[in-house]
Length: 562
Image (cartoon, rainbow, N blue to C red; front, side, top):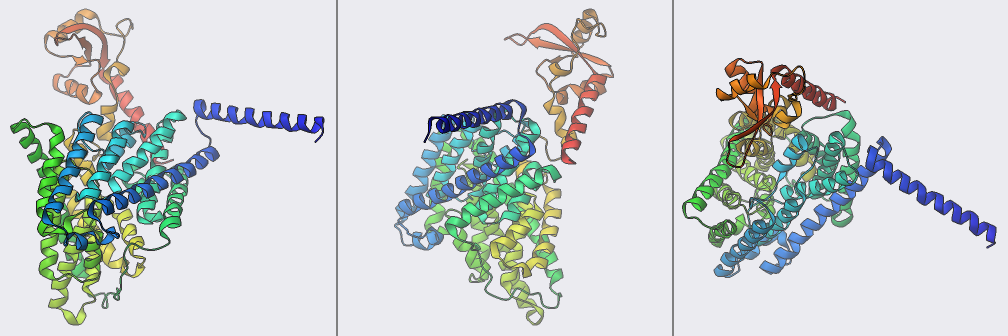
């Protein structure tokens, strides 16, 4: 190679390196362009897909080690052969380890879940907690491996949020871009977990972003496909469940029965959700009443789960074996009812003890068992015009899960993609529509939004309810030096009447003062360490607050309709 050729190649290499550096600088400071964003969505989809795959593989490996079984899909059958004390010890030690992890790496000893991802999308520019999220992932991994009665999709969704948050922080993504990247990561993770690309994409739009903006659709689909490819490269193109018996409706005369099943499943979904919240309240009261250390709470739940699993190992882990048996109609009526009740209790114990995991897989199991029980009764009453009772199990599975997630569209598609059988569509759609319509009236739209409502985060009512909580009085107030601002003497007069707000307060806290006192403005103050008013820093005018609120509403509407 001549000297001139080497010089040209060296020059071209230097130009390429400089172009890459300039591209990275522009990406960090100006945000990604449309093509760059799609490329980033693809990379996030691959990363989230691998995260979901490795999480699932980790559960399988650890569960196989703890219980000594080669096939974790049949964990409860194998657990029936183990000594009773081993069934009790494993979840107890697992709960103790979970408690120590959460105690040391989170500020509130609480596992992060999809509700936190929804909050991050709405209130935090598409960001979630990274350190607490990683700790929650390990806690959920141990929970699911050691006998906790929950699902793997919740931790995977938040883990995907951690991936997108890391990327968003690196490229200094704005709120819209950060939310879109979060949707991409969630779509890929859900798609990889269930081998369901269509449902994964719609889950991200319907549950996490809570809108169907066109600008977010293409990158989210790209990420969902990438996550699915990662799953299929390892597991193959196979459905989680298969419907062995014919799934056709008998001349459509069964549709009223599926309408009734939907209502029944809506009630069951509400019972499942409220039992979890009730268990959390009981757990809080118990810990406060006896002044127990917070790291001990998951261990106590582990003892309770182990005690139940000694007689009913069906509650261990995700529960796919029992779900598959219900979908194939191989469980008797009495057992289906008992297992559904016990699973609900086990899920409540797991969540009440803050052990980690998701609620979707338990909802699938409870729904399949409930649907099977309903189908066994319905087909025995009118055997001549009835199809298979297994079809009711599929419809029940979708109905309970959709009501819990508050996601009728994506859940219906997940059931289709889990089974690979589109002939059951009518039954599932009818049951899902009735269950979600009923359950959404009895809780705050869904399990996740009700969780947030219990924390004082009002997302269920839409942007008009939570946008005021995103705006601080200090960012909207007028400075005292502003000639349009009220005088300090007038402010002190209002303060003497108890009419003032803290500078760090939100407009949600400030707005009631204007209605209650019928005043055009209110002083904004700061307090000292003892709680006394230190000084007046500005004045919040009602008109300014309304303008800021209106701008936030307009920006949200523009994003959702772009």
